[in-house]
Length: 227
Image (tube, rainbow, N blue to C red):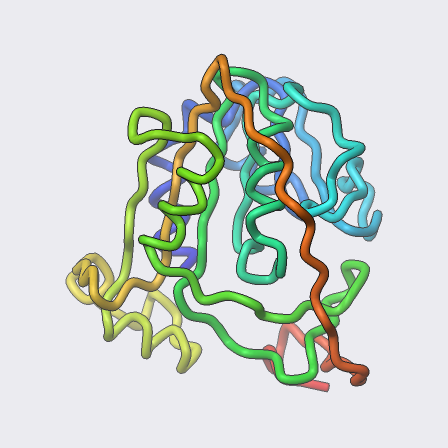
């Protein structure tokens, strides 16, 4: 998935500028934004690193100021947020008019049956596997029209299988990676420019049920399911 996302960010480097916000850290902002970024911040549910200056659950981010950021990179997170509609609302609300949201939605991912603790504040659970029509409906329900966003789909049946087998992009050919099969998407990437007159009611919040289990511990050497 990161192969596609990096190509997408390279395509939209000019949008990563000014006061920029990113999920979890600022590495992506600094890498792709360069001198266009005046100030880089990170948002997460806990201050697990010095880069996290905005401590908030994105789906409950009422205390994060509106109309503040020039760019928000929301990456590899939406499938882990139960109340995805509320998270998307806040992702737009905190942008300045004309600010850009660069966001992705996973179509398939590993499932963590006991949750996964990556040391970022709370265990993660996978709630969603998105489809393009689902994402389009989410965007339109927030008052956005076709002139406000572009949506790109990446992947195919082979890359979906390769991803779940934990194969790296380097093990696939460019032809295998770059072929797009709309019937078997792997990653949805969206660029939204916040309209100057954007207004949308805050959605009713939905709270998930979570099992009482001891989560798996993330191990970057042995993989997702290491304990």
